[in-house]
Amino acid sequence: MMNGKLLLVEDDPALADLLKWHFEREDFHVAHTPDGDEALLLAAETPPDIILLDWMIEGISGLEVCRRVRRAPETANVPIIMLTGRGEEADRVRGLETGADDYVTKPFSPRELVARVRAVLRRVRPALAGELLKFADLEMDIVSHKVKRAGKTIPLGPTEFRLLRHFLEHPGRVFSRARLLDSVWGRDRDIELRTVDVHIRRLRQAINIGGKPELIRTVRSAGYALDDDGG
Image (cartoon, rainbow, N blue to C red):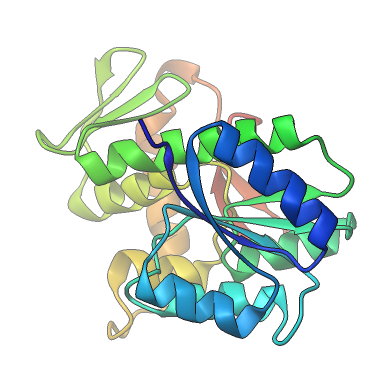
């Protein structure tokens, strides 16, 4: 059974060949290009299940490719893992803020990367299939509109439900307040950024029942993330 369509955007021929071999061995269908402009064309023509995107590529930059993939309706929800030699925290935050779902710093093990891709696909496919979304001891049934933590039902308002669903579909990913407004409330809504903070606070109060560990993490100068590190 094919594991999915993977678009590899990498301009190092040796690394590209190595990754292509590893992913095809794991039954992925791999499309490869070294060029950012061609990557956007390929993604638009046949939206992949996941994109592996090098930060430094020919043509437009990996960050700009990421930005445009997120803006296009047909690829807005395609997971993106960025590959880069940049290991500074500011660069990681910049990549995630641009829309990347995960971030792998070179050098890395191809086997580790295959595992990371599988993990990302496991997270997004339940959402696409309309099944249960799970993170730590938190569970959301999209069909019945029910949320449980450690087996206990949690009542949520419609906005908090949509907000939590967005986090559950992208665990670990940092979202700015502006991006949350776009994704949860919609681009044409005239809502202030601080509204996000109010609903985050309500969501935290609802899901942190019985002294449970914090799951919604505040990332200083960046935004919020669903993360079991707490904070």
